[in-house]
Image (cartoon, rainbow, N blue to C red):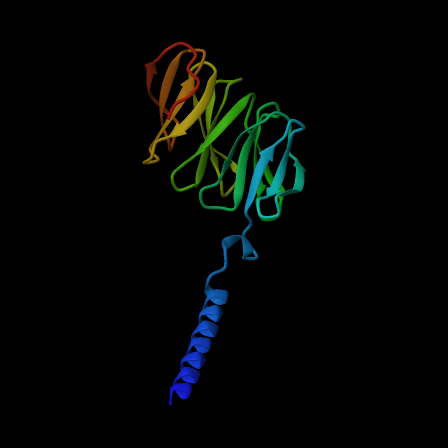
Amino acid sequence: MGRARNVRIYFLAVVVAIGALILLLREHRPSFLRPDLHLCAYVTTADGAVTVVDLVKLKAVAHIPVGPGLSGMREHPTRPEILGISSLGGFAWIFDARAYQVSARIPLGPLPYALDFSPDGGRAYTTTSGNDTVLAIDIRSRTIAARGRTGREPVLARVSPDGKTVVVVNRRDGTLGVHDAATLELRSTVSVLPQPEGVA
């Protein structure tokens, strides 16, 4: 009787273990193993390129030429894309993170530096220091959706959490410009210390 009971317990344990293994193999797959997702880092290099580093294999898997003076690189909040700025080239670039290629270059104007996204990811905002402008880029159409005048030498645009306001740091004026996010019309200007460089 004791031997038959042990056999049943061992059999039940094997069945439960096999069931658990099947469940784990079907349901628990780390995201970097799914065919359309990757665990990568994107690094701008001095030669005007983006190097893609596979964080699972711990090696560079691609080196893609983009343009001179790369800066302001950000991951899109909802799409598999990386956006950045070519300060010396005067354009924004969109990198397809699945295909490892630049999918768009959007002309901006002289000396753009950084960008920020609207909360829904539909727009990216940037400034061009060379012609004192704030710009809204429509991500879907890859075009300039709006332009607005800023103070002298705008270096940074940040979007409010509600997506209704864009704050622009005007370095040479020592001011913050408060703009309407939809039209980029200037609402007000606030004086700050000389040569501000950042805002949160």
